[in-house]
Image 1: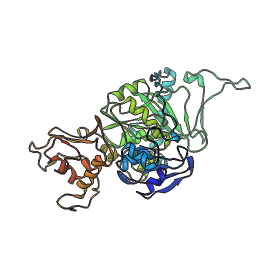
Image 2: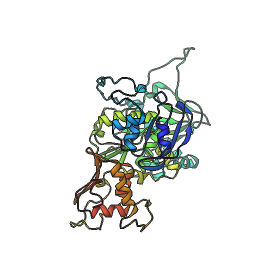
Image 3: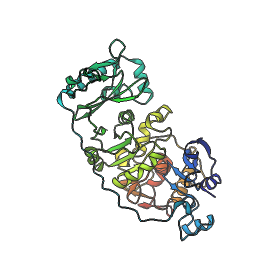
Image 4: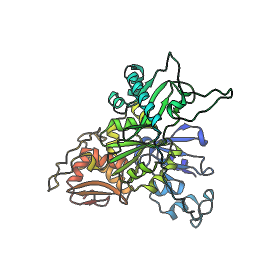
Length: 442
């Protein structure tokens, strides 16, 4: 019996991909949803594996029984007819973990002055062209980048010259000369397309172009710096994404969190960005939730204590999520500590008046629905806390927080505590300052 067999007993799964032997999705047995739970039946030599992008539970068949059936390790092994003294055969013998190499963030130099001067002219010229390109503006708006963000982050459009790409002398940009086979100097290619500039202290350090067609789809102008794009570095929270356009959509959609674009799911921040991330109040990691994105989480968890996995509720990235109707501002705020999202003052008697809230999303339980004397959403919270015994609700006059081992908790539990009024009011009126599943319903 593998993970797929165990999961099918609790939830209904549907096949969504044939890659890597097949991938199935459905509701999470622990935190619900509709498609956040992923199962790969053929992984681990047919034993399977699972991962929930909501509550971040993942593992093999033994871990599934521990996570969703409350079994001990010994009981799970007995149920699966596996010897508890050994690891399952598909996992191989347990080996001591080799010491991980020390991570040293890369440091990058800014481009030379001739490059920066020409890049600034190109960005300014292309920006004016984009403001009159209604088709390109509509495409950006469809991915969550409105006109304000276009203007603030100086996106542009290169229409070329007479319908053709631009070519300039490399020497004019301060670049070394490259000669063709015939001995003539090779020109600098500046293709038509969407201009995506990156800045360091207001100075253009990189220009990436998204071409409307052809390969490569994305092209970086030679001489650009390899700096990590960090938009709104002064904000106390940050969202980690892969693409620069996603970073612009995220930063432009809210006033609380900046955004860092690392390029790929395994991309790492450079030295300057690494230092700023270490000082952030909260890091929300929204890298694509494919297998590569899941595997990359271990590195982020190891290097940043203020880090939480925070994938978009629908789609694979923020741009796609916006296209599917997700409000990026509400999604970001739902993952931030309460101190960043609303005033923490409340009456000293901690009665039902709740502290002001900036975020308001659709309540998941029917309004005024009652099960006994408790709202159904409170009952749901009790069940989730029971299944996650390490989670504690901090409920003091100056702080309302949801933590596990000193880290903020997201997912369905956070949604209930901070965004469902009936639950928030119940918590604020609760007599205990540390609420766990055992005392929640007192």
